[in-house]
Structures are given as structure tokens and as C-alpha cells.
Length: 244
Length: 200
Image 1 (cartoon, each protein chain N blue to C red):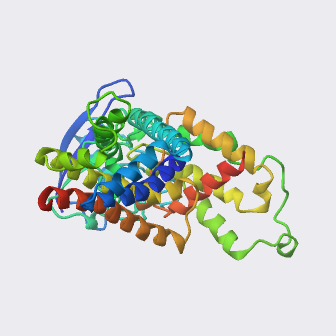
Image 2 (tube, rainbow over the protein chains, first blue to last red):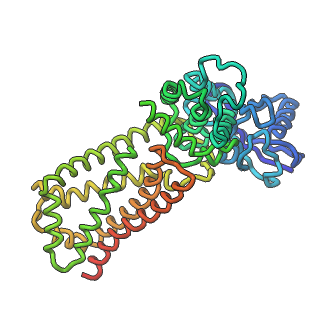
């Protein structure tokens, strides 16, 4: 396969960036998007040019590092997967692919496609934990948890904090991320004790960091690689109202 | 903002019910209803609440929108292709258009009542009928009600989500009611205007 790549290049957070055009031949349809970028970088290094900087770690869809905005979609046009799971077979041969970094004020570009997503860590640090040692896993029957709630808590806990929700939202809101992190605790007895402080602290931190507000457009839900749903945001709202 | 918006949503059916009296050939019922709305003390209190809700809804809407614009100082080269509610993208623009129409509306009626603009405050029936005979006014009126319908469609269900009310069974019901509300209410206002314009 052959592709024309329009990739955002930016030396550092202070530099002005622009799109560079690259032509890449001999791309295998089985390659992942990141492997395709590896092939491009190999070519650039051989030509003594600066390789494209992008983030990746596990390449298994569970670390949340490999976020980039591909042809108008965070993580590319295929729903419910991360960029590392995006195969080149999902693109047409000779297609032009636009690759941009996440765009949000709290996610400054470090270089090329790498953004600083530590704002999400700061929100988590503000309250996304249980502050007392709850010990080892208790005997299941001693702390009965409704199956439905346990499933909902698990579904929330699979958020990998990749930032696709922020990237997709027209307001650069982190509401889906915060809702997942609040929900995973709020639904379980261990998390109820500090529920009031947690939700307030996390929302306060989110606002302080400059994320936008939720206007219920649903872009976050549509683009979340872990399929966190809008019901999670409604739960976040309820938790917030209950905290007063 | 959601609560203020929902309060405003309650007012529209009342307004439409009164406007339907404009279709009668006798001006008396409409003028009586308009007089009742203007002078009854309880309605006066509701009117103050309505203005407060309107003010909160508008000012908070602009405040949030500015914050949202600031949250993404550098936009994307390729516009989003995410599968989202198309109406939510234009809420600030549909809302601003409705605000401009409200200012025009206040000039027509509310300011007459306050004596700031010429017109007979005892005969709003004739004021309305005369306005609906002006084609340009009708074009503005009908455009604004189409925009109001688009605004209401997203606003109705969005308000429930903002209040934390999202339910597997009830949310689809709310969305259906939102669709009906956003078609029937603006459609009703438009029907009255078109009927007077073309057939009276």
C-alpha cells in the first residue's frame, strides 16, 4: 500500500508547528499504524532527517500512551480501539492521512505528536484513590456487592486515561475521564467513604487545569477506545450534587 | 443552566396556548388572556422568575461557551468526524439567534406595555395581526422558530443528562419527547404566523 502522510511537526512546546508531507510506499496492510510510523521514521533516519516523535508503550491497547488524532478521529476512524491496534488495512490504498496531536489547552505539545497528558494524572492525584489501606481482597461473602454494580465499576475502571475523550470533545472537556474515575470508586463500598471529597476535588482540579465543560454532544462516548458511556457522566453529576 | 432552561421550556406551551387565540376572528379572548398575563399578580411573580431564568440561562451559556473556546486555543486542521449530536455543535449560535429574536419580540410587545414603544397595550391582537402581515417579519419569525426547534431538541434531553438523569429505559423516552416538543411547539407558533399571514 502507498500513503501520503500529512503529519504535524513541532520542535517543542514553544515552537510554531506545521504539517509536513511524506510519501510512504510498501506499507503492509497487516501493519499497525504505529508500525507504519516506525517504517516512516526508519526512512527519515536513513535520509538523515529528524524522525517523527510519537508516544507509545505497551502497543496492546492498555497503556493509553499512543493517542493521536487521525483523519478527524482520536485513535483513527475505527471505533473502540487505540492507535496501536489500528491496522493499515482500514485505510484505502493511496489515501492521504492527516495526523495531528491531541488539541487542548491542558495538553501542551511537547514535540510533534507527543502531548503532555499529566493534567489527567493531576486530576487523579486530587482524589482518585482510597486513602486508607483496605488490606488484601476480603472474603467475597463478607462484603457483598451487587453484580450489576460490580460490573459497572469494572466497566468504569477500564478507562486507560488516554485523553481521547478530551481530544474528541468540541469543548476539550475531561468529563468522561473524571466520570469513569469517580464511578469506579463510587459504585463500591470501599470508595463510598470518601465519595463526597473525591468528586468535589477531582472536578475542582479539572476546572482549575483549564478543561472545557460538557455540553452532552457525545463525541467522547463515540471515540472512547474503552467504550465508557455517557451514563457515567450522569453518575458523576449525581455524585457531585449529592456531595452538597 | 439546565434548571433555568427547563423552567423556560415550561413557559412555551403556555405562550403557545395563548397565541392560538390569535386564530379566532374575535380579538376579545386573546386581548383578555394577554391582559390577564400582564396584570394578574401571581403571573407577575412568575414573570420575574421567567426573566431571572432567562438571564441565568443566557449569561451562564455565554460564560461556559467562552471557557470552552479557551480550552482549545489551537484547533484541528481536520474537523471532527466523530458520531455526535449535530445540534449540540451550534447551541451558542441557535441560542444567540433566539436572543436577538427575543429583543425584537420585546420591542413589539413588552416595550409597548411599558410605554417605551408606540402601540396600544390594550389591543395586542391587532399588533400581532399587523406584524404577521409583514413578509419580512414572517421570514425572521419562521427562521427563528426553526432555530428554536433545533435548540430545543438538544436542550431538552441535554438538561436531563446534566441533572444526572440518564436511564437505560427513560432516556430514549426523554429523547422522543424532546423530538416531539421541538417539532410541535415551534411548529405551532409557525402555523399561527403562516395562517394569519396567508389566510386572514
